[in-house]
Image (cartoon, rainbow, N blue to C red; front, side, top):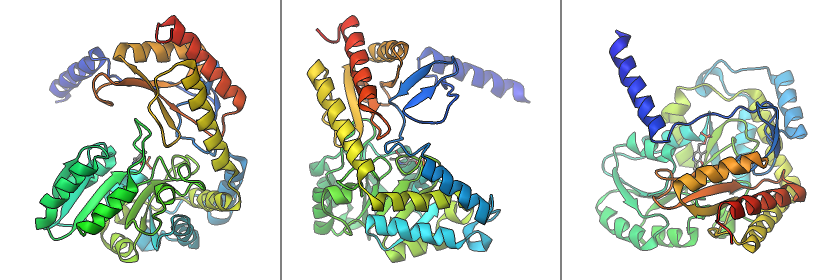
Amino acid sequence: MYGSIQKYLQEEIKSIREAGLYKDERIITSPQEAEIKVSSGRSVLNFCANNYLGLSNHPELIAAAKEGMDTYGFGMSSVRFICGTQDLHKELEKKIAEFFGTEDTILYAACFDANGGVFEPLLNSQDAIISDSLNHASIIDGVRLCKAQRYRYKNADMHDLEEKLKEAMEQRFRIIVTDAVFSMDGNVAPMAEIIKLAEKYDALVMIDECHSAGVVGKTGRGVTELFDVRGKVDIITGTLGKAFGGAIGGFTTGKKEIVDMLRQRSRPYLFSNSLPPMIVKAGIRMIEMMSETNDLQDALHFNTDYFYKEMKKAGFDIKPTESAIVPIMLYDARLSQDFAAALLKEGIYVIGFYFPVVPRGEARIRVQLSTGHTKEHLDKAVAAFTKVGKEMGVLK
Ligand SMILES: *Cc1c(COP(=O)(O)O)cnc(C)c1O
């Protein structure tokens, strides 16, 4: 039985390899942090993790996770509405709502689930979802699971968004959906204008703060802080798997009735296990840490500015970033791969992205900064980029 599909899969995998799109996984043998050990035994500086605030191996979160396990056990063996809700879960939900200035929060196993389960309970075929063309795969999948009419506007293009809103006036409810930070360019969605258009065309606004929560805004409250529109976004989704500790877990936070309805009808919430106490306890501690001081954000913003300026000074072509993502433009797919390989030899771990992950002819190295990087790490990275840049003729 397996024979024919096996042959098909082997051929497909071969063609993925031949197209240079096969994803090999590099093995790390240390915890996730600025300096990691790879399976060859070498230490390299990590500039491609979503570990923006350097919390992935933070002693306070590890201690909180252990305490969570010691006092509340290992697993929940239940979905939330049967017997999987501890006081801890309610506490974290409340803390996340306070952090974003929203009314209530619902936890998920991941943000992929939060986005997958947000549309279908709220909207039906009478409604419209107006989605940015660069939105994350999980938003695209969530939209697919919902019967609402779909509209796609060009990335952060307010003129196109307005056109789509006009078209969507025939539907009952409209929702504008966008990533808050776009992960390939590091640009932020123009929230002030989006909210103006939402008011003009009577639409809801949903943002995905996965790359911006903890990162963007003076105190890391995300794009609603950056644009001074706290409380004006109806739905915010986010992850505990990036800046917020890097383990696992997602959430939707926003208007009370929306969250209430998701608890009743959101399938990834209803039919998937409750987050384990250690994750929840560490999540609570993480939010507390961010409320006690702004040191983590200040250090991240310093590191991002410093790296950006030094790389500009070195002569690199960089897209203006508004987050902790710095795209070093190389434009050529092959070059982006060779460049990343040469950097790894210099002890700098970064990834080169090219079509179809980014538009054709816009290949780049994506650098992600972290609070965990020291000035020495940053200087070493700039020096390695400069050396390889000269060797490969990218810099004069
Ligand atoms: C990473 C990411 C997700 C998925 O988050 P998980 O918690 O890892 O499932 C969703 N949306 C965006 C924009 C992301 O960057």
